Length: 68
Image 1 (spheres, rainbow, N blue to C red):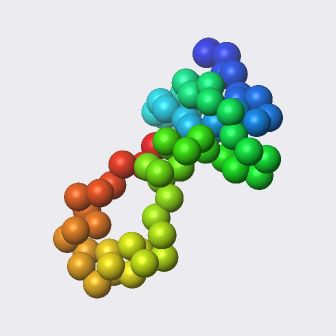
Image 2: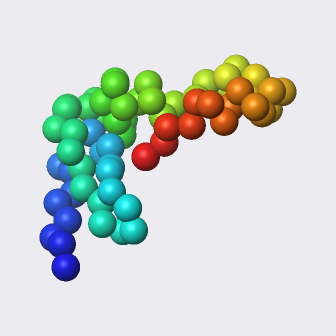
């Protein structure tokens, strides 16, 4: 069994891994109330406008899927 080290308060919560065996490789600091550093936030956040565009054109949304 692998010991999981959870991110500390104020640390990016970007997770990697599969099947429940996750680790948190990013050590970047984050502001209070924010889960991800700026780099990872840009990867996972989808603006309402983009979400609307994806609903209107679902083929395009399949190309952008990156989530952890």
